[in-house]
Image (cartoon, rainbow, N blue to C red; front, top):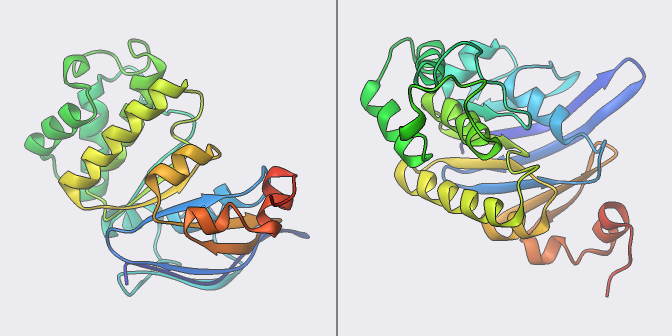
Length: 238
Protein backbone atom coordinates (compact mmCIF):
# COMPACT_ATOMS: atom_id res chain seq x y z
CA UNK A 1 0.00 0.00 0.00
CA UNK A 2 1.32 3.45 -0.88
CA UNK A 3 -0.35 5.62 1.79
CA UNK A 4 -2.04 4.44 4.97
CA UNK A 5 -3.75 6.81 7.40
CA UNK A 6 -5.09 5.26 10.59
CA UNK A 7 -7.11 7.36 13.03
CA UNK A 8 -5.46 10.68 12.17
CA UNK A 9 -6.60 13.42 14.55
CA UNK A 10 -5.34 17.00 14.57
CA UNK A 11 -6.36 19.34 17.38
CA UNK A 12 -5.41 22.94 17.97
CA UNK A 13 -6.14 23.47 21.64
CA UNK A 14 -9.84 22.73 22.04
CA UNK A 15 -10.52 22.79 18.28
CA UNK A 16 -10.47 19.39 16.61
CA UNK A 17 -9.78 20.12 12.94
CA UNK A 18 -9.44 16.48 11.85
CA UNK A 19 -11.04 13.66 13.82
CA UNK A 20 -10.10 9.98 13.53
CA UNK A 21 -9.66 9.89 9.75
CA UNK A 22 -8.52 6.63 8.15
CA UNK A 23 -8.07 5.68 4.50
CA UNK A 24 -5.56 4.04 2.20
CA UNK A 25 -4.19 4.70 -1.28
CA UNK A 26 -2.50 2.24 -3.60
CA UNK A 27 0.16 3.22 -6.11
CA UNK A 28 -1.42 4.97 -9.08
CA UNK A 29 -4.67 5.80 -7.25
CA UNK A 30 -6.41 9.12 -7.89
CA UNK A 31 -8.32 10.13 -4.77
CA UNK A 32 -10.44 13.26 -4.39
CA UNK A 33 -10.81 14.96 -1.01
CA UNK A 34 -13.90 17.18 -0.79
CA UNK A 35 -16.07 18.91 1.77
CA UNK A 36 -17.32 22.35 2.75
CA UNK A 37 -15.00 25.15 3.80
CA UNK A 38 -13.51 24.42 7.20
CA UNK A 39 -14.04 20.67 6.88
CA UNK A 40 -10.38 19.92 7.64
CA UNK A 41 -9.13 19.10 4.15
CA UNK A 42 -6.03 21.29 4.13
CA UNK A 43 -5.24 20.38 7.74
CA UNK A 44 -5.25 16.72 6.72
CA UNK A 45 -2.92 17.58 3.82
CA UNK A 46 -0.66 19.38 6.29
CA UNK A 47 -0.59 16.32 8.54
CA UNK A 48 0.52 14.11 5.64
CA UNK A 49 3.09 16.53 4.23
CA UNK A 50 4.54 17.45 7.64
CA UNK A 51 3.38 21.03 8.22
CA UNK A 52 1.43 19.96 11.31
CA UNK A 53 1.90 17.01 13.64
CA UNK A 54 -1.16 14.83 14.32
CA UNK A 55 -2.41 14.70 17.88
CA UNK A 56 -3.23 11.02 17.42
CA UNK A 57 -3.04 8.38 14.73
CA UNK A 58 -0.56 6.80 12.38
CA UNK A 59 0.52 7.59 8.82
CA UNK A 60 2.71 5.41 6.61
CA UNK A 61 4.14 5.78 3.13
CA UNK A 62 5.15 2.46 1.60
CA UNK A 63 5.22 1.05 5.11
CA UNK A 64 7.47 3.79 6.52
CA UNK A 65 6.29 5.85 9.50
CA UNK A 66 5.61 9.38 8.31
CA UNK A 67 4.87 10.93 11.69
CA UNK A 68 8.49 10.77 12.78
CA UNK A 69 9.79 12.28 9.52
CA UNK A 70 10.58 16.00 9.10
CA UNK A 71 9.30 17.72 5.96
CA UNK A 72 12.48 17.24 3.91
CA UNK A 73 12.53 13.52 4.72
CA UNK A 74 8.90 13.19 3.61
CA UNK A 75 9.80 14.86 0.33
CA UNK A 76 12.68 12.44 -0.15
CA UNK A 77 10.40 9.52 0.75
CA UNK A 78 8.11 10.44 -2.14
CA UNK A 79 5.56 13.09 -1.10
CA UNK A 80 5.19 16.09 -3.40
CA UNK A 81 2.75 18.91 -2.76
CA UNK A 82 1.37 21.80 -4.77
CA UNK A 83 -0.39 24.62 -2.90
CA UNK A 84 -3.57 26.50 -3.76
CA UNK A 85 -1.76 29.85 -3.78
CA UNK A 86 1.32 29.59 -6.00
CA UNK A 87 4.56 30.12 -4.11
CA UNK A 88 7.31 30.77 -6.66
CA UNK A 89 10.78 31.45 -5.35
CA UNK A 90 11.26 35.15 -5.97
CA UNK A 91 14.05 36.47 -8.17
CA UNK A 92 14.64 33.00 -9.59
CA UNK A 93 13.76 31.80 -13.06
CA UNK A 94 11.19 29.09 -13.70
CA UNK A 95 13.98 26.57 -14.30
CA UNK A 96 15.82 27.64 -11.14
CA UNK A 97 12.62 27.06 -9.13
CA UNK A 98 12.65 23.43 -10.29
CA UNK A 99 16.38 23.10 -9.63
CA UNK A 100 15.90 24.21 -6.01
CA UNK A 101 12.97 21.81 -5.54
CA UNK A 102 14.91 18.93 -7.07
CA UNK A 103 17.98 19.52 -4.91
CA UNK A 104 15.87 19.90 -1.75
CA UNK A 105 14.07 16.60 -2.20
CA UNK A 106 16.59 14.40 -3.99
CA UNK A 107 19.96 15.95 -3.15
CA UNK A 108 20.84 16.25 -6.83
CA UNK A 109 19.82 18.05 -10.01
CA UNK A 110 18.34 16.02 -12.85
CA UNK A 111 18.37 18.47 -15.76
CA UNK A 112 16.85 15.95 -18.17
CA UNK A 113 13.86 15.43 -15.88
CA UNK A 114 13.53 19.17 -15.31
CA UNK A 115 13.40 19.78 -19.07
CA UNK A 116 10.81 17.04 -19.44
CA UNK A 117 8.65 18.49 -16.67
CA UNK A 118 8.84 21.97 -18.17
CA UNK A 119 7.65 20.56 -21.50
CA UNK A 120 4.83 18.52 -19.91
CA UNK A 121 3.57 21.56 -17.98
CA UNK A 122 3.91 23.76 -21.10
CA UNK A 123 6.50 25.97 -19.43
CA UNK A 124 9.48 25.26 -21.67
CA UNK A 125 9.16 28.62 -23.43
CA UNK A 126 9.20 30.39 -20.04
CA UNK A 127 12.09 28.41 -18.53
CA UNK A 128 14.37 31.44 -18.22
CA UNK A 129 11.62 33.91 -17.23
CA UNK A 130 11.45 35.26 -13.70
CA UNK A 131 8.94 33.00 -11.96
CA UNK A 132 7.34 35.57 -9.66
CA UNK A 133 6.73 38.32 -12.23
CA UNK A 134 6.57 36.92 -15.76
CA UNK A 135 3.90 34.21 -15.51
CA UNK A 136 0.15 34.34 -16.01
CA UNK A 137 -2.06 32.68 -13.38
CA UNK A 138 -2.37 29.40 -15.31
CA UNK A 139 1.41 29.33 -15.72
CA UNK A 140 1.91 30.01 -12.00
CA UNK A 141 -0.36 27.05 -11.23
CA UNK A 142 1.60 24.92 -13.68
CA UNK A 143 4.86 25.95 -12.02
CA UNK A 144 3.47 24.94 -8.63
CA UNK A 145 2.81 21.44 -9.98
CA UNK A 146 6.15 21.39 -11.80
CA UNK A 147 8.05 22.15 -8.58
CA UNK A 148 6.27 19.26 -6.86
CA UNK A 149 7.12 16.95 -9.77
CA UNK A 150 10.77 18.00 -9.57
CA UNK A 151 10.92 16.34 -6.14
CA UNK A 152 10.35 12.96 -7.87
CA UNK A 153 7.23 12.07 -5.87
CA UNK A 154 5.32 8.82 -5.64
CA UNK A 155 2.31 10.69 -4.21
CA UNK A 156 1.42 14.10 -5.65
CA UNK A 157 -0.85 16.18 -3.41
CA UNK A 158 -2.76 18.95 -5.17
CA UNK A 159 -4.44 21.51 -2.92
CA UNK A 160 -7.01 23.30 -5.13
CA UNK A 161 -4.46 23.99 -7.85
CA UNK A 162 -7.28 24.66 -10.32
CA UNK A 163 -8.92 27.31 -8.11
CA UNK A 164 -9.29 30.66 -9.85
CA UNK A 165 -9.09 29.26 -13.38
CA UNK A 166 -11.96 29.68 -15.82
CA UNK A 167 -13.68 26.58 -17.23
CA UNK A 168 -11.55 26.21 -20.35
CA UNK A 169 -8.39 26.68 -18.31
CA UNK A 170 -9.48 24.01 -15.82
CA UNK A 171 -10.19 21.51 -18.58
CA UNK A 172 -6.86 22.18 -20.26
CA UNK A 173 -5.10 21.74 -16.91
CA UNK A 174 -6.90 18.42 -16.37
CA UNK A 175 -5.50 17.17 -19.68
CA UNK A 176 -2.05 18.22 -18.49
CA UNK A 177 -2.51 16.23 -15.27
CA UNK A 178 -3.53 13.22 -17.37
CA UNK A 179 -0.26 13.55 -19.28
CA UNK A 180 1.70 13.81 -16.03
CA UNK A 181 0.08 10.64 -14.67
CA UNK A 182 0.66 8.76 -17.90
CA UNK A 183 4.36 9.73 -17.89
CA UNK A 184 5.20 9.14 -14.23
CA UNK A 185 2.54 6.72 -12.95
CA UNK A 186 1.88 8.85 -9.88
CA UNK A 187 -0.82 8.57 -7.27
CA UNK A 188 -2.77 11.82 -6.90
CA UNK A 189 -4.53 13.13 -3.79
CA UNK A 190 -6.64 16.10 -4.84
CA UNK A 191 -8.50 18.75 -2.86
CA UNK A 192 -10.97 20.47 -5.16
CA UNK A 193 -14.37 22.14 -4.81
CA UNK A 194 -15.34 21.82 -8.46
CA UNK A 195 -17.45 18.68 -8.85
CA UNK A 196 -16.75 18.37 -12.58
CA UNK A 197 -13.02 18.31 -11.87
CA UNK A 198 -13.32 15.67 -9.15
CA UNK A 199 -15.66 13.52 -11.24
CA UNK A 200 -13.41 13.78 -14.28
CA UNK A 201 -10.11 13.05 -12.54
CA UNK A 202 -10.84 10.85 -9.55
CA UNK A 203 -11.54 7.15 -9.30
CA UNK A 204 -12.55 7.49 -5.66
CA UNK A 205 -13.69 10.34 -3.39
CA UNK A 206 -13.69 10.85 0.36
CA UNK A 207 -15.74 13.57 2.03
CA UNK A 208 -14.90 15.42 5.24
CA UNK A 209 -17.30 17.48 7.32
CA UNK A 210 -16.32 19.09 10.62
CA UNK A 211 -13.11 17.08 10.45
CA UNK A 212 -14.80 13.69 10.17
CA UNK A 213 -14.89 11.34 7.20
CA UNK A 214 -18.57 11.02 6.32
CA UNK A 215 -18.51 9.23 2.95
CA UNK A 216 -16.19 7.32 0.64
CA UNK A 217 -16.70 5.77 -2.78
CA UNK A 218 -16.94 6.54 -6.47
CA UNK A 219 -17.79 10.12 -7.44
CA UNK A 220 -21.27 9.03 -8.55
CA UNK A 221 -21.95 7.30 -5.25
CA UNK A 222 -20.54 10.08 -3.07
CA UNK A 223 -22.23 13.00 -4.79
CA UNK A 224 -25.60 11.27 -4.49
CA UNK A 225 -25.18 10.47 -0.80
CA UNK A 226 -27.83 12.29 1.23
CA UNK A 227 -25.46 13.21 4.07
CA UNK A 228 -22.93 14.59 1.61
CA UNK A 229 -25.61 16.63 -0.15
CA UNK A 230 -26.76 18.13 3.15
CA UNK A 231 -23.25 18.95 4.36
CA UNK A 232 -21.46 19.79 1.14
CA UNK A 233 -24.11 21.37 -1.07
CA UNK A 234 -26.74 22.34 1.48
CA UNK A 235 -29.51 20.68 -0.54
CA UNK A 236 -31.40 17.42 -0.50
CA UNK A 237 -30.95 14.27 -2.55
CA UNK A 238 -32.99 14.04 -5.72
